[in-house]
Image (tube, rainbow, N blue to C red; front, side, top):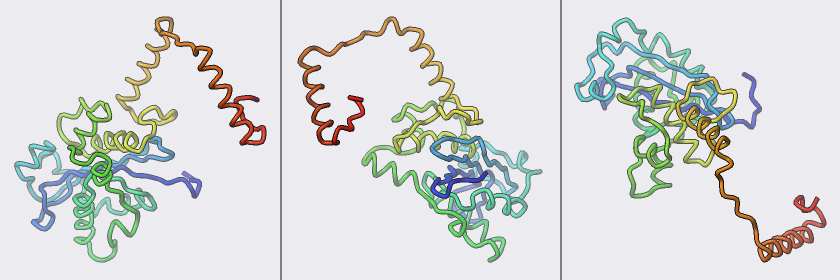
Length: 243
């Protein structure tokens, strides 16, 4: 896809791992990523399960539910590294608690030698958890809490999954930054929120006759007219509401 040089390509990314510490030999078992361009999810996702060559900790398995048996025939990170880096190259990664995922990705790259460098050599990283803490200090800012705060449907999230969490985080990020969340026309990804929102709009249109219409009174109309005249004068006769 050819992009305008001023358009930022964003990749919302999440990983699932065998445990909490790469320094203890834990590995990535799933990568999920969602592309966002012009504040719209494009449907160009990246999703890959990985064979970690080790067991998951019980606590980690309880979170993601991805078994050793399921991963037995999956490729290793070395097998997909080139495709993965080509996908994220030049983008801004958006990750919730970025040091965790970045640490694991860089550990995987380091295990392959010096050839691949670090993930920061290919893209920039924005930590949405830091953003959430700055925006909502003193409050819970995990993904579930943010979904409740921004009224984003995550009822289909029984276990953590990298791609599902990336899709949810994309909606959360767009809501946190004041943009449209799920109604991107032309986006190919399936999104429960989009369907719910469109349904709500249709219901609102069908019930329009029930809406109460509040008309401005004389005083409000006069005040509005004075404000327009002030704008007209300040703009040298270019007030668009009087044209």
